[in-house]
Image (cartoon, rainbow, N blue to C red):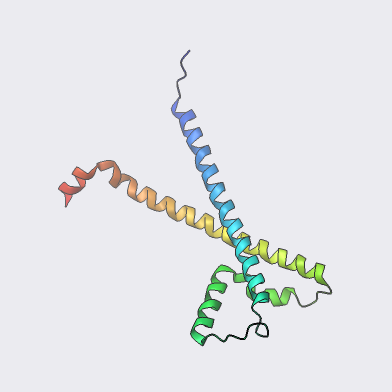
Length: 139
């Protein structure tokens, strides 16, 4: 008994694989965002000014601040989130919320990166289908 894939079944399986790949990419971006937030929160507590006697230059400090702002944009909202907290469990909850917010931000960036990639793939597809000989003749 032979199995013949129709165009609809082939497109359906390709679409499912495409959707699964996109979901996997978004999950990876989300996890990276959560980990980045946890890293920056831990680094800010580990490197408080009263604990480390080493002073870095203003340029390096600015560079670190810029990298933190890019990878953890909700860092500016963190002080507002921590204003009314009464204990350690509340702080942990707010840090978890901040980490999840950052994960959501990274997931959104992952979706945007996916669609930008799709545009480039569609843009390259006609050129790749022609073959190298056809591209050489056109030049």
